[in-house]
Image (cartoon, rainbow, N blue to C red; front, side, top):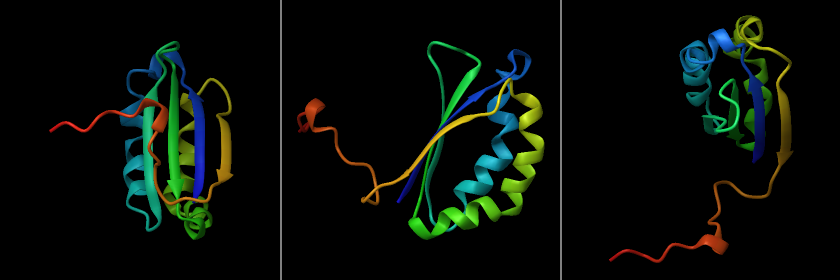
Length: 109
């Protein structure tokens, strides 16, 4: 799978509304064939920073960046940002989350 993490620094005046500003892009991406997940989180240290964790089946990444909603996001989202988002993108040999064995939680039962 293609695994991507990106950091978006949002202008302070848009920080509270960012989930709504990015909602159309988020919903459209989540509906794409091959999108495994597309999840936003907000930094605990910087309330203007949002972190996007996304994953696609290997063959779906190219279609994502060619989609109409991606092109629309390229136009609509940057005016709300302080800087160009930072990204880590890699291909990993798995198709879903693995368990973090070092913090295993005993089964409840």
